[in-house]
Length: 544
Image (cartoon, rainbow, N blue to C red; front, side, top):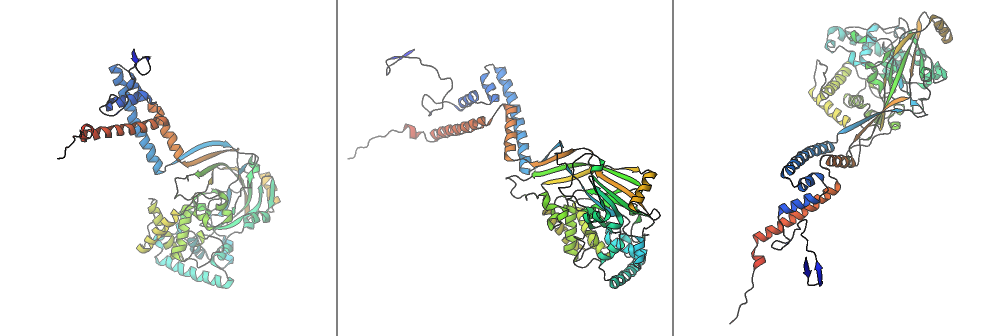
């Protein structure tokens, strides 16, 4: 103990537990190693503290090795998290949910005749099967045999078809879309009856509900559902049921030199299940369920809701905001409908054909009242073929081989596709439907009553039923999102606590320690470089 002269009493002179940095040359000065030791002993980070607080040499080396190892792992993990964050990676979260009491929105149904035309109507118009085949090629260029277009037989067929079509158009004052409509079955000829939930409707009421749509499978009819059309009770009879007339022996014999008949194996009535956000023009050719006569086709569906609202955060300034589903519905067809993520590919191809070809072809008309000139067969094949070829190359898919190549047009097509694809916007909530189908033959006794109820002649037609429904109220919910700054801070903070036992308080401690250490080193450097400033002596000078 030592007596204090100032206080007149005794005070205990204790040694400082932690060295305190002071000015060099004074009693409180310390080395860099002592400062590091003081920080390690007082920091809230567990790793360095274990190294500093263990007096034994082997324990100190053990904890130093463990801390160094976890520090390296932490740096690599944090670097990986930052790379993914600034790359704006998309994450997904999937869960299974139960529907609310309002039920689930039913899908859109599109009814198509994969045989394109009625032979009886073709004959009534004064047209032969070769001209009908020519029109099939204009509707669906994917069926055309590209290698045979320049052959003498196909050229002669095309000249004959042009003359016959021109004569019919002049005689009946038709446009080509009106001619195709006259060659196809009408809604009243196909749709005999329909039901939604417990409500049944006759043919005329059903056809007021459906919308005619031009597709690459010819004239189709879509039952476009809205958000109000929901299945509120489970069971097969609470969905949508269609009673469809199946014509007998009314198919057009197609000319095999012009179209590939091996791709026409589906030539019956077909129903395609989509959402009301999907453009069915190109889709119906590649997807659908064929109907079986005198049988019921049951299609239980499973709904998946994909939420994309989390793809735009305050960091993603250049990302376009998502569209509300009501603004991107087929029911209210608009230009923005083709620029959504649901229809990005089809929309880009469709718009580029309109821009570059100066004409339209039936399979991708915006509406049934198309304005402008319809493309000839050769122009349809050339434009669609080259645009689709450029798209296939961009997607790194096998592409078709065309007999003639236009380098300038191919460059314009590539530029147009890139521009249109860049304009696609996400829909805030997309609906997708997965389904299976089962076919059950109707009992003869029931068929007899059904034919009588529908007033259907069994000699030239038959009936097919299709019902689409939800077997349960369960649906899949998928959430797509990008990490926000809060996600990054949470992830990095969690890894810091896991590997080194650190927190945000430790970060502040480290910053303060770094500032003090740099300040201390600068003071020492100043005293080493300019020692005369601390030990200079002023000598008086006598003037004579």
